Image (tube, rainbow, N blue to C red; front, side, top):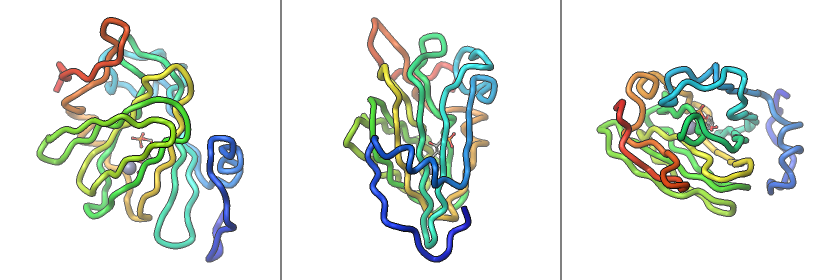
Length: 182
Ligand code: S6P
Ligand code: ZN
């Protein structure tokens, strides 16, 4: 929907996801076939990895709701592609509405950070840091992201070289390990 200059107040808990979806302006779906080269192994092209619903805010920010399926490609947990923002000044706030996951951030100098992102928690992503979220649980991982309208997505660098760290199942547990392909 094209916004006038306001949005009605709305609540956003995991129970309200359908309301967000019904008000969304844009929908992105990523299956295994859309993520060639992002996982260490190739994913089943028809396997649903995640969906993103976006609401264009009427003023300075937009919102994205990511719903990521549980699962792995080989031993690597389901994750987003990950991106830098096109705008060098665009930072972002992430909140986890449901599930159990992680976020990995990487600066332009390849400094790496990883943090848990679980239901009720949030993370600040500074400008200039690429970011990828990972579902390490056994249920949907649902995230709300709030970002400036001019943020944009720059997938190129991540597509080319990836993140320094990846999240794999090791001895039955999620572990952050060095990316052998980096
Ligand atoms: C946008 C924000 C999220 C992601 C979404 C999918 O700045 O970070 O809405 O777009 O989680 O991730 P990706 O890496 O495929 O865009
Ligand atoms: Zn982002």
